[in-house]
Length: 115
Image (cartoon, rainbow, N blue to C red; front, side):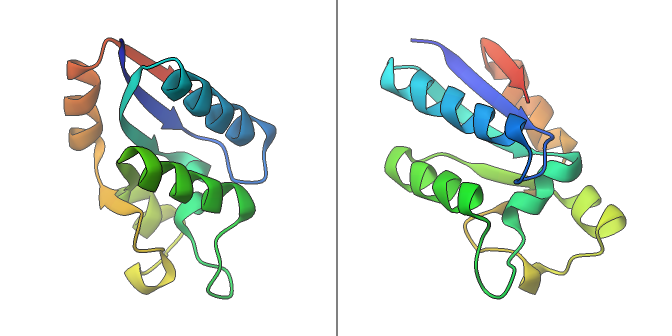
């Protein structure tokens, strides 16, 4: 079993976002552990609510997180500075965090994958 941290930099509508999700599903099916999914750059848009709904792939991340007790973390700096999103525009299952949280999780993981 390998401890993995995923870093998703792709927007929800980009193919690499779906690739990251399928990688997570496969890793979990093989018995690996995902310590954290960190959404950075355009990836923070996974947590944005559009008309009180998540993008379809973001909703899948939410389901996967609930099934496997995964931590979904949006980079707070990018959310606030680059996209000017308020907390009310974000889904409650996506936590705000920073590069410190990501770095700590990455330091404890055996593998970090970036999408």
